[in-house]
Length: 326
Image 1 (tube, rainbow, N blue to C red):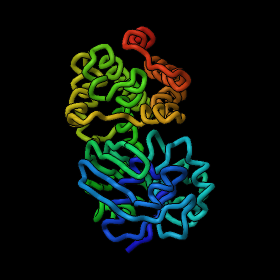
Image 2: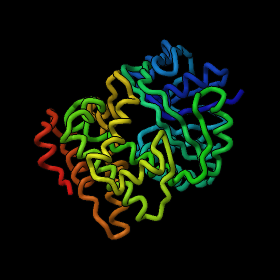
Image 3: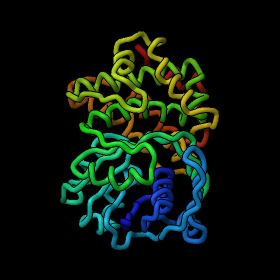
């Protein structure tokens, strides 16, 4: 079995660590504070859509010697996390993060190309230190130079692992999916409740439309992902907003009845900086590079930064007034 090191004990890194350990791999995971104490004392508890796991793993602030590394931190923590774990500069690395080209950034920092990119479509919440609830079982798509290595490594332990060519186009499609992430954080509601609120549904749909259009304008072929087919991507891009809203409605239905809190909202609840600059902000940056604008995503990004600094959520009316639709 393989010695796997996982940097980041959040919802994604934590559930992967438990499932790999259950398969018999030797798993080490980095954690801090209460999460480190909880995992060291009582292991990782994972419940929900993948089943029940209670696994002992080696938890410490930095990784020991391992055979392969999975980076599952927030995107904004990439440089700090890799600097703190020098073993990553000597081993193949799988980067599972939101946003675009995380594996490319990691390769630049590490100084080697033995890096794969991962896209997780699983929804999970870190409900307390050491305890993770998987609210919706998704797939894990892996590509890039070391994509085949990590696909083979994870397939035995994690359901729904698949190798994908053209990881960059798949990342753009995941970015479209991630447009359900920010708006719930603005109003402090679940993703399902937010999508069920008509003014907020229109905003989410409009942000998806901008993302598809900017992704294509940037020269990317958006690839089918998590039920988001080529037909549905074109519906988002060209169809009237009320019809395109079928897509986020379908996503909410797949999530089921358990309230899903996006990663942006989870960060705000914990008083942590969000990844908004790598999500909606990434669309704004990409638009600027091709001489375009992304006003919906720009407004959402600005509002999330405001929300990070205030104690109360926005009202639905406040959000609707601040975000332009066209």
